[in-house]
Image (cartoon, rainbow, N blue to C red; front, top):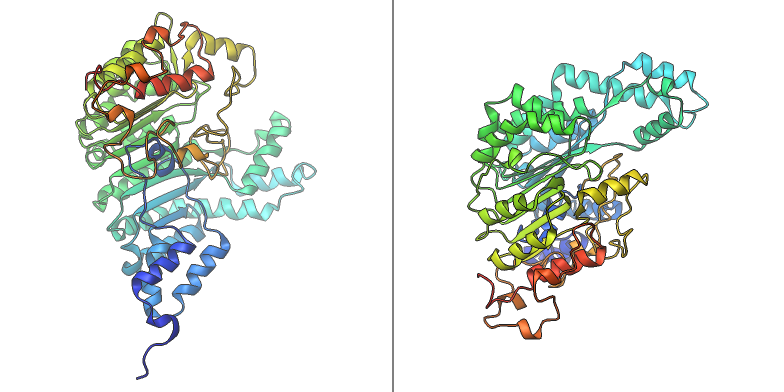
Length: 511
């Protein structure tokens, strides 16, 4: 037999280096210690590979059997599946091949709006409103409506999800996302532009889609005893929590006990306070069972901050391993934040308080002082769009939309800003391919803390030096010098406050 020639003589290590030039290390992840984790790892939707990149990897694997084996992780470490007939068929094929499925570590489930109306009603709408919908092919919607009905009636999604969760023996992270494709987006925009009577003829619903997807994937994870430990739902519907509480209550503690990371963002504002209060006991069950949590984020719509006390959701639970904690859009007393942070003062490395509005009588300087002087290991803090509740309400009373940075400064160039689209509508979840550079490439004085792309558990920053640095610091000497007026927060203040909290003097702070 002749000796191998050309590229066939290359070692597997060199072949992997070649593939790294085409596609980054498929196993690479962001450390949960950094602010980027709650954004990139959990809330960023799966980006489709560039056609040329996918084509190149496919061609690479066609060279020979050895090349095919080396290239498998670059195609199958992260799987994104749409709840549709083609998507489920593709997932079925992948999980039928154990040599492919064993590499999957992250599974993203892309769930479209459900067509509540039947196909005849959709067709009547498109025909009667042809001048409004002339850009759309009615057959697209008939086919999608038929597919949805058949998939749900035959429970094909449940069957294939169970098969996939059993096959993904290395699964770590499950992500549930709302999907709105281009045809749905155009349809919704046209209906919004039409009269309400016409728009009411067609009913595209996220609530039943979210409820169904949450229930089926939870059942699949439990029934197959999946090894997953992370769950992300950046576009959850609050009613889905109530349905889980009623439909699969016995599964909740078992699922929660496996979690090391949980990120939930509820993007519906209707009756939000009442629904979250009703779900309070469900949260208690989850958090008491989730003893191994290392990262936790619970968020709500920026325009509609939750009006419940913090402990109505978190129930005074203390997680011994918690390293990153985040909340978004909440009206709170300063003491509520202080008490929760104190419970985790020896473990917490990152704290996100996005869109948090303090109530009358509370002041941010009290929260900041506690974080600076009592948190022993805090490496980063995010105060994006924090404000005072009264000022927040005044802004909304006088404008249609709150523009971030309207009080001076802009976050667009150096903030982890997440535009409200991943082929989705009306959500302020943290998303997208447009995550700004500060969430992925960070210096020590940025929002992430040091070395955002490395595992830096003991960063070599000013905060870790063993001697006093007070005399050399240009930061305010105390919380009283932070310029907190108890009424509103400027962008420049917020950025300075973040740096002040992390720039604590190692000799005079408690750690």
